[in-house]
Length: 116
Image 1 (tube, rainbow, N blue to C red):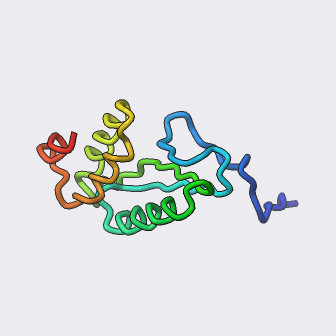
Image 2: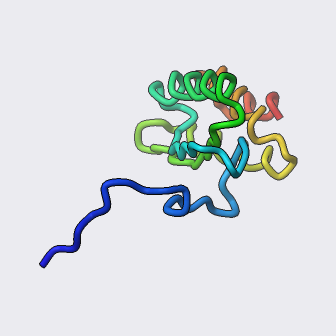
């Protein structure tokens, strides 16, 4: 007999990993986990929307960013993800994330070095 699938989940069902990039309070009512690609044309407007949500509901939303570079479609996505990880090691992931999405069509190695 198939197991019944729960129709709802609570905050304890969401696993936030130690190497995730997280912004917002741990006690937030809502946690958004986004899998993004810095070169994806659909991720850029999603990033802008999440920024607006964070600005409006700062105490009530936590945002978790996870890398999901589609390297077959976006040849610069992996290198951009690696640049953001380097920024994260300096506690600068989210500013670098903003820069990468704002400059989505300029993600060559020389560009990434300028953003660092």
